[in-house]
Every structure is written in C-alpha cells, then in structure tokens.
Amino acid sequence: MVVDFHLGDALTLRKAHPCGGTSWRVERLGADIGIRCLTCGHYLLTSRRKLERAVKEHTHPVAASESDDPRAL
Image (cartoon, rainbow, N blue to C red; front, side):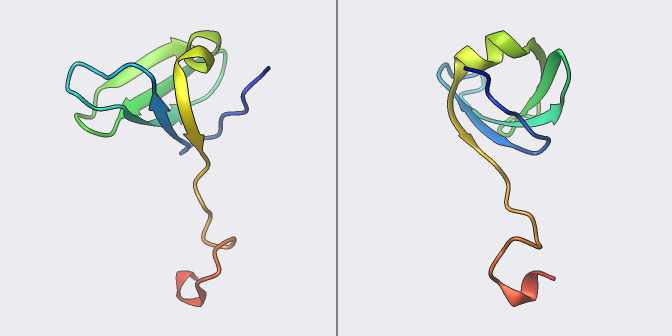
C-alpha cells in the first residue's frame, strides 16, 4: 500500500526521537522525504519506504478554504 504524503502533513511515528518527541511535519517530497521534529526542530531525510513503515498516525492539514470558520479567510 502506497501512502500519499503532502507538504505540511503531521505524522506520528511509532518510535520516539531521542528528544522524546513523536510528532513530525513533512517538509520535502520526492524519492526521499524530509521531515522535521516538532519538539526539537531536528530535520531528517529518509526514504519513502522506510517512512511508510514508521508512521503510526498520518493527518492532512486543513486548508483555510476548506474550513467551516468564516473568519479563516
């Protein structure tokens, strides 16, 4: 199964980073995917296949045009 990643996606990985954080954000796409730890700011470049196996939870960000809040414009 191929996971569809997008820039800005929030990821929760199965294994914790040494800083203790498990929350990451997708910052680069391609054959390799760049993710940034939201706890300490560390940047990691990993293969798509390895990242697909490490992801526990994957959420897409809500764009301002898609939200129901009229103040978001």
